Length: 478
Image (cartoon, rainbow, N blue to C red; front, side):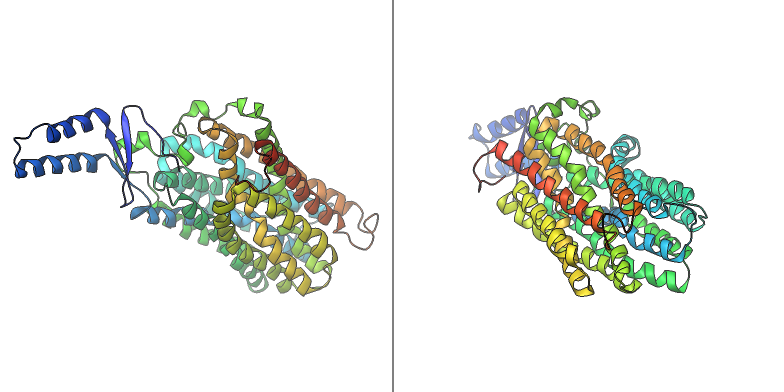
């Protein structure tokens, strides 16, 4: 990795996991004192060497070791509820089967709740950047924890769908975004060479939580009733929030607060003036990547939400329906880690293209003809393994498309574009619920299958165009 350069400083990365910022003039003076004073005794020489080491020790940043891994634990706890929208399909299925709400287009309205939660979780990370400067990681995580706990408790008391919009989609969505935003700003300060490993751990653990939560949600609903689903989630969020508050913190030295090593050497990451530079869209590759970003998020969301509903439709039990989401989340847990390793070897864009191809084929070849539990499990494994590729690879892909100074703006533009994740699943839901026995024949979920598979296919085309615009060699690492 190319290390960032600072005016008047040199950067040395030693074997113990330290990045040392040394003022060049001071370093030259210290070296001259040693090199050009032959009258120094061995004791004096040792004294000067110790002085150099002490000077370096004062300016060093401890990375990739020690407390950095505690920050990873805190970041993992803070981002553990990022996967909540993916299990919304299980909760939505409970609401529909139990007839908890009356009215027309209930399925579409409940789908909008999950879509809005997903969109706010992504887009409000931008807002978290504003609060981070004033509150820091612990203050921002504390605010996110309060919003999460309050939102879940209010959702447990909801008696109308519009209550869910306010308490779950908006309140919990903001809370998750603030906690996640804190990890995105805090973690890069503590990692350079092992930063992808840290983010990989943080990105995979929410999938592991999604492996367990669908079964917990179903069991709690059957024994205690649906309000206790959100009370349990509220107390879990409170526990993870406390862990995050304890471990997340900025680099302690004063220099680090101004010279924190940003993601992929973007030293202007903390410069608010660079957060919304729309000139990044003048880059055709970036424009194509931004267009494909919400499509990829929406395709993955459709699979997670509608597979359990489809399982109920073909006659499977509630436990089997919840199991499909758990299997998908468990497969995604391993997939995110393995795909991250593969991306380091063949390139993140190449890995992403291969993953979208696999997901599209899984929809059209497996889900399209899945009428038994075993075949639906097969789809869940394949879709889960490759479906999380975008989440872990989009920062690396973005940094290869734009230069370092444009990275913050590119990231914010992508997150704004992902607001479309509200619209796309909603459109699919409206077509799917309009006529259960019309053009789709005996399969009312056909529209969801075509939409999910088609979106993955479009993502493959757009990302392939970006790849060949950057380099026409097929096997080049990008």
